[in-house]
Length: 52
Image 1: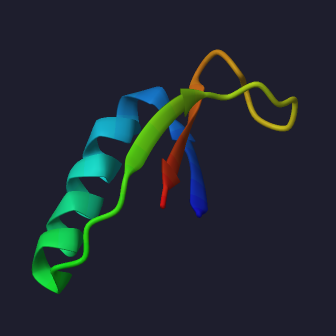
Image 2 (image 1 turned 30 degrees about the vertical axis):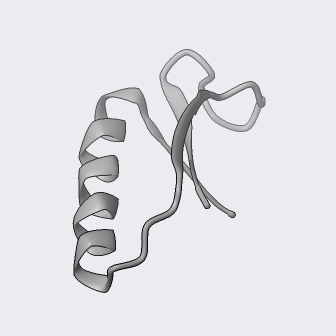
């Protein structure tokens, strides 16, 4: 499973980009967007996009 820590406003764009790559390759995996609960990044503006 890969995790991408991105700004909440960029999450939709990243999911679209991942979907395009999956369509090209013919391999499809689950994509989940979860709230970020850590302390390293700003938790109010950051989400975790989990792929796999």
